[in-house]
Length: 217
Image 1 (cartoon, rainbow, N blue to C red):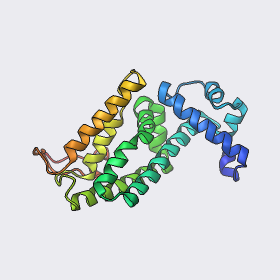
Image 2 (image 1 turned 90 degrees about the horizontal axis):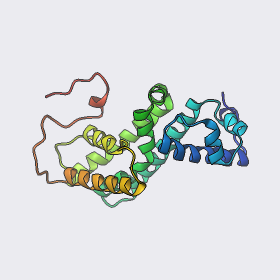
Image 3 (image 1 turned 45 degrees about the vertical axis):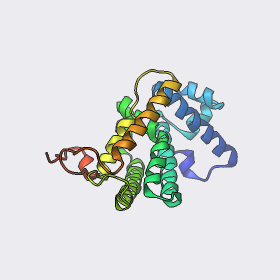
Image 4 (image 1 turned 90 degrees about the vertical axis):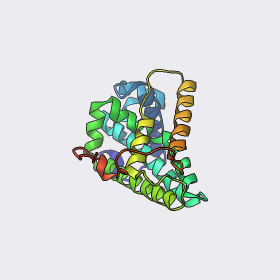
């Protein structure tokens, strides 16, 4: 049990924790999860002892960063669905803010250790299910209003989104941003109704994305 779970954090402890998470997000995103913990502490402006009191090992820090990313995008997804005038606008907004979960995807792709930790973590699983549930509501609402092509499912959209978020190799921040924005625009054009092509097979559900499930031809 960490100090965080044992009792509520004081204001200075909450501030330290937020600084550590912000630093870890930046460092993990740029260099992966093998960066020395001392370097993360230095970027956070805290001592290594403070870091280990908050996060006793690397996995606990990786999971905390992933939880933070998921929580941010779930909050934004809920707001998009509630505030936008159309479900299509909510989908566009969700895609535009999907950078919040990019680090979580990168951790799973680039670090086998992080991938195993996320797969075994109940909280991460709960976050994924909640996010997919919100995405499913947006997809179905957009199809009802006639703005999203009817021959795609939530599984299709989730799979395309995960491909969009995968790391594209070493490049400048500007080029990376431009590629991401262009890919998002192309993806939205492909999803917009009316459809301009016929897709093979049927719409994919979220359930069909689970390992071991065979897709119908």
